[in-house]
Image 1 (tube, rainbow, N blue to C red):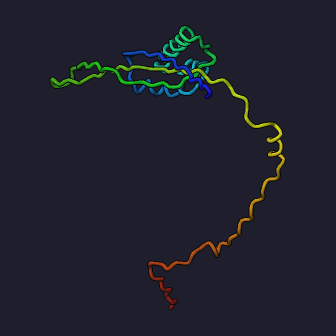
Image 2 (spheres, rainbow, N blue to C red; image 1 turned 45 degrees about the horizontal axis):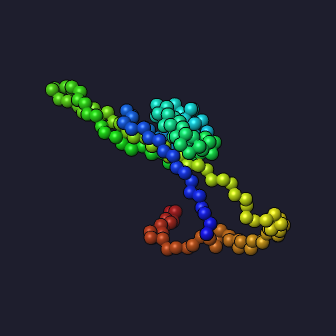
Image 3 (spheres, rainbow, N blue to C red; image 1 turned 90 degrees about the vertical axis):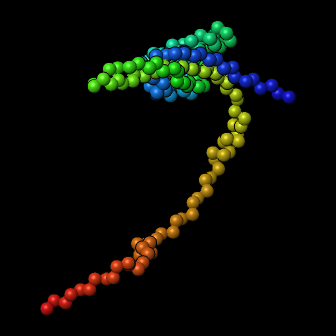
Length: 169
């Protein structure tokens, strides 16, 4: 029986962030699936407010990995980032003719999950087998049958009757 090592997951979460979840999701999509150094570079050059918050959550997850599991930052990549909606604060604003308008101040919960990158395994194929495959001649394609314009146009009956040419008087 062989032992398969499952990659260790590390998670960090920021709750009740005073930001719309929709706006935070736009930035979270940019770092999903990237390595940690690459994700930091992307967040550093993103000009949205959510980038700063996501950068803090990413740093927290990296610190958790180093402190709790001893995993170096270079070996981590972002497995998942998601933004869930939090509670909505409802406020009221006076409007014309004694009416009110509802103001929704949205909050969100941001979660970043990091995973240790698996070690690179040696390729299973041998070098001579690859050399033989590259030297083998490529099979030629069968020549395509040429069609002319007269063959490609189908003659169909017109729905309208043909116009009669009037004879010049």
